[in-house]
Length: 306
Image (cartoon, rainbow, N blue to C red):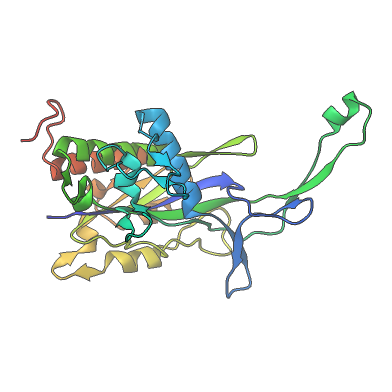
């Protein structure tokens, strides 16, 4: 039975994650590549933070499971995955003095969101003149790095390990609900940063449910250079579609979700797969949620197992 759900997504946003900075300059988190270009990124931790935040806001996920009883801020000793959706999806490590740490690996793996367009040293000059003028003082000055770009990241979920942790085994209905909540959050994902609320909802998605948990399309999202407008490199994606896992052909289980009017080569992207495997972004999430319910044998209407 297929158990590995993976999605590689693209969204568009502005300046998502800042580091320590220097002096009065707020610096974006970024790295350099061998091509001499610099790219910004939002860390895995920042994405997880917003996923959990929305889980609480939209679905009342229980976040009251943290303490510092052992001198370390961590999940409570007696908290289990039954109490915490966050612990179930993203794992935990509980340290106990004089004993080995109790750990659970993350069942949901999230990569950093990396910009597809290079950073060109754009800056924004800030001041607090409005407030300073009220009290007859000179305003304070600051510079903040800015980068508006397409970003890509990948999420991989081992459906077989959701709701399973030693003696704790959740019902199929609860397992399905947790994965459905997560997919809904990814569809509506946003980030609050420096007075802004950035929309991280996908414009393009490729992935599906496979026999193995593997991020098949991680690292295969690139923009074609020297094109007016945005075009995705279909050769990299096609190479991923041609991979096999024993007798399983990746392309037969892969689907695409795409917002219309974003990419100039939309027809080429749609043509990589049969039309029944190409959806709108919302249609892609609807398809995945139905497949998750089928995996856990959950009756959509009765909320019971078949």
